[in-house]
Image (cartoon, rainbow, N blue to C red):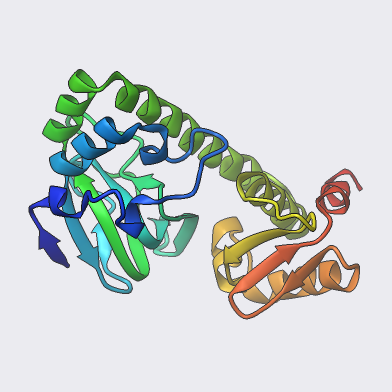
Amino acid sequence: MVERSDAHEVADPGEPRAELPRPGTGRYVLKALDKPDLDLVMRTGRLATYQNREYLLREGEPANGIHIILNGIVESTHAGTQGRELMLSTWEAGDFVGAPYILGDHRHSWSARALGRVEALHLDQDAVRRLIAQSPSFAVALIECLGFKGETYSMLAQTLAGQKAAERLVLLLVKLCENAAQDESGSISLGRITQANLARMIGATRQSISLILSRLQDDGIISTGPTKMVVNDLAALRKQVAD
């Protein structure tokens, strides 16, 4: 991990990492801020760069604030009782990791690991407290983001409650679609997602995931690639749950 203590050096308005996707659900904390509040957050935090498979935080370690992802993809994982790793979710530029406890004396409930090169802004607990006191906009954005994360993990719990792997997978894909952007053609790109990741998210084998996805692709509901999946017909995907 490479750290740079002067986070305000990259708070230039023309810097591309500050141009995060426009949120539609209160998901991205930085894009909810106007420029003065955004500059304040960037000055307050500490920038860090993580290489592929490097941990931003580890399960069981003392929690200390949040890491806002500026570039790259981060996965949240949990170690099961038998040592099996379960992938809980993936997070992109604009999301943060470090929840559910961002203040107080707690330990991380799960780990966060870089998938490829990641740049993040670390706000420790003292920084988060100062920003909450100084910027009501930041405080509101943080609450909205925590709500989004709570909904995401609630969805995961509901998905895992499904009795069949096919049902769990379809429920997961529907929720991922609802959180993703829909292009003009009506299709929804789920971005960088693999069969192995899907298997880890719902507690199934990769072979069963492959069979289910092949059926959905044969029906024209999805299109798949090595690291990208596109949902062509969300209504038909939802119908798979009803059926």
